[in-house]
Length: 336
Image (tube, rainbow, N blue to C red; front, side):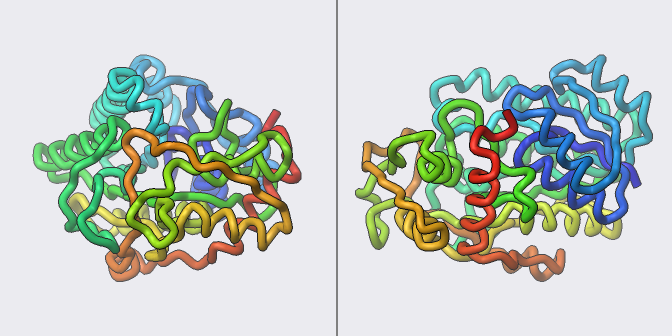
């Protein structure tokens, strides 16, 4: 079986490439490299000892994407490609809607043309908005609080409508919580361009001396220490969930949605303090005002994924911190 991976040079995509190759799949990667680096795929080839075709294209370029489907025999798609910074989406909503929605519409149109009707979609826990209670299960009301989250929610609706129009599609929607960590080898990991949007790479860049302090966005949330609480999941656990979802689609028709999280909520200060404990690095931080679009508490009820996919997260916060630090300390400039 050959899997097309969109956004395969990115943080989660590159780890999925490793997992797929190590489990005997053939793959094809497309990525426009706008917020990723080709070096990640070179290192994937080193780690796995396997080669695969790569196309540097944008999903907005339908002609180029159709060429990929002409050149390669594609059986299914894992769709990671998309813009993903909450703050930037608030500043540039049109940019996010155009890129994320139009790219997906073109992708699914080309898939239909070439009779490829199996897709695992990278969604987000942001589609739950500001939940009235936690843990969050898949039946919760959907109401995103920022354009990034709304773009994910709109894509989910698009995929459901595609299935309604043609019941031969098989679609898994995976709602991620907060991926951190890195491959055990330290060879691939999160490599943000510019100022990190996510907490863990900010912490590791402070630890390595690239930045002076971690900015904590708000300490006045209704949580036990006032800082935001999130469900942090190791990226390797996350991509293992994608393989389970792909295997599920081999046996099951329709559209199914799954939370991929640990079911445990940790605050920003919990993450900083755990990182300090695991690595013996001092992590100075300063509290600033909340970011637009952020919420106080968000963590998963992952029972459905355990029941239907036979999947659950296995790595704890200590291992997430250790692997994140190994990646950063051995690659102080990322892939540069």
